[in-house]
Structure formats: structure tokens, C-alpha cells
Image 1 (cartoon, rainbow, N blue to C red):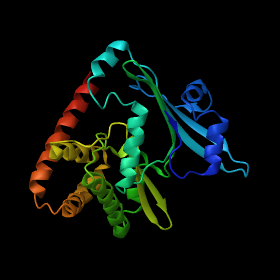
Image 2 (image 1 turned 135 degrees about the vertical axis):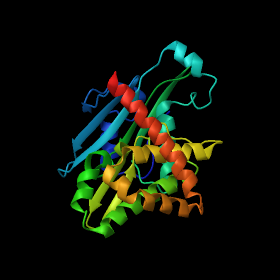
Image 3 (image 1 turned 180 degrees about the vertical axis):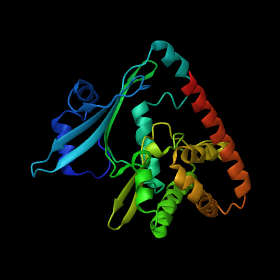
Length: 272
């Protein structure tokens, strides 16, 4: 399968076609860009693509390539419907679902997969980059700079409420809802939030409370301590108001219990 999705800047689609990134073969043969390496990528290769348009504008894209996994792993996953769908195609569908839910995220430029006897063999996806920077990197500085501007801090918290509630109201969960995957874009017209890394997102068929708690605990665990201590109560109250759920004590207890487990796990890793 090879597709270009959505209404996209013709300069981008032109570059994709000229670079043969509109086919699986072309994507896996392409050796340009900057590889972004980190531990735990397994069969994934992540590449940042930059190019200049004829009018001199620099455009950045992001490509993720999923290489074949071992035959044993393919056999183990063959009987799970989700696993029989190519990883890049799953991510593409998640991006489309988030956008439909009103969750700002990247746009898909190209996606493709090749199938073998036991399902997908390799796949790839090219997306636009979202503006701004991850809250993990810029959040503390942003909050410090606006510490005496309560209206900005309130807008920041409300933006996170909207991001989380839109996602969960649509029945979606992220599964890695850390501040490293939430981008903040501060501009003259206000603040915008974008959610990235949607490969593991899905719609749980049951136990939605558990999955929502997991997302919110990941957010609380990873946010700047100053925001957690001063703004968490406003965040969770605003979030639950969207769902008309008065059970704030129940939610906070479940979230804090999971945050405590995450901290203990982190300490064990640090002590090794």
C-alpha cells in the first residue's frame, strides 16, 4: 500500500515524489536526512528530513521506518488483529483519529507497507513536524517566565485539559502521555498544544478508567514540579468537569497510586 493523505502543500508532495519517498522501496533505499537514535528503537529507524523549497523556505519532515522483525515474533503476533496491521499504518490511523477528535498533531504526508505470508513485513510513514517544543524541555522555563502572570498559567493548564479531555472523550488513550510527547507552541495569538508519538495509541474496548488513569498519571509524573504543586487541582477539576464526573477523590487516589509506582520503578532503575 502506498498513499499520500490529506490536503498537503504541493511543495511537500512534490519533494516526496521527487525523492521516491512515495513508495516503500524508495523510502527504505533513501539515505538522506538525519537519523535520530535513542535506546529501545528495536526495528524502528527515525529520520529527520529537511529541504528548501524553490522560494528558499526550509521545511522539516519526519520519517519512521519499521524494518522486518524475526519470524518468531511474527508468528507470535499473527493471531492478534492489531498486530496484523502494519505498524506505520496503525500510526497513520491513530493520527487521523486524533485529528478527528480535535487533538492537534502531525499530518501524514506518505505511508506505505509491504505484506508477506504472515502479514506486514516492513512499513514506513512520513509526517510533518509540529511547531513548538516538548514541555519536557521548555515547560519549566515557560512557567518560570510567566510565574507572575496567572492568566497565562491558567491558559496553559486549560490547554492541557482540552488536549486530554478531547482525546479521552473520543475513546482514545495515548499510553505514553508524558510531557516529552506534548509540544507547546507559544505565539502572539496564544498557546497551542500538540500531541506526538501516536504509535501506541488505541481505543480500549473495556477498563477505560484504568487507561485514562494511566495517561493522567504519566502526565502528572512528567510535568514540572511547580506546575504539579500549584496547578494539578485546577487541571483535574477542569478535566472531570468535561465528563460531568464529581469523583475527584477517586481519580486523584488512583492517579497518585500509579505515580508512586512509577517513582519506585524509576528509583530501582537508578540504583542498578
